[in-house]
Image (cartoon, rainbow, N blue to C red):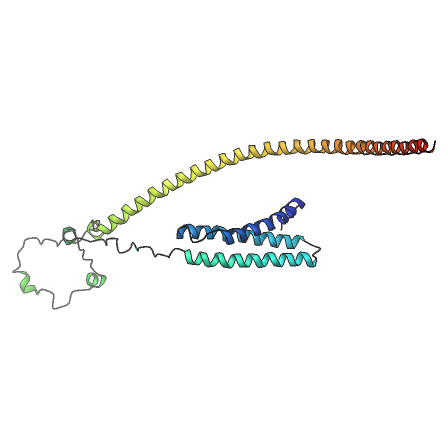
Length: 277
């Protein structure tokens, strides 16, 4: 918790009654039904914010007032009751003038679902590959499948053509087609990447501008600090001069008063002497 100075405490004590009186005056004298409903709602929001600030000031003043007397306690209760009345009235006005909440229109029904054309599906070349299993490759031929020796003589003597087996390239072939959904997702990703790049650029510009503003504010704060230090030294000198002048003027004032008394006594004595003689 930060330590509050005497100036801040005095500032809060002075501003609290003024702020409460101003709020009470605005509630009693202002016409809350003359302006439009939106203006009335905005005005009520600002008044509620000022009421919160007044409550904070009241809390700080009560905390800083160590020697609380019955009179100050009565004054705090009266201020708190006034703030409660004002807040109740403004809250009622704010609830009456509050704009109705409208639910935003959903955008999901407006998004068109991706449609895949039948012609695109028919035009996609699909290659199927048959992979032999180990059971068929390693199984030995049965006796029924063997050709007897009497029939081997009747077979032609031409060399047999080896059947075409699937190659490794056909086994690793892929479907060379890009559906519409992939195209849409790629376009969306490109758009998002562009937006992220723009956001990064804008963030860099904001950081640069913020750093420049900090440098300017630092120079202004340093200049104000120098001026305040100079004013403080000047006020110290003037305070010393005022103290010396007050001492001198006090002695001079006493001398003048004594002179007047002496003159008055001499005048009275002279009058008495003249009357007697």
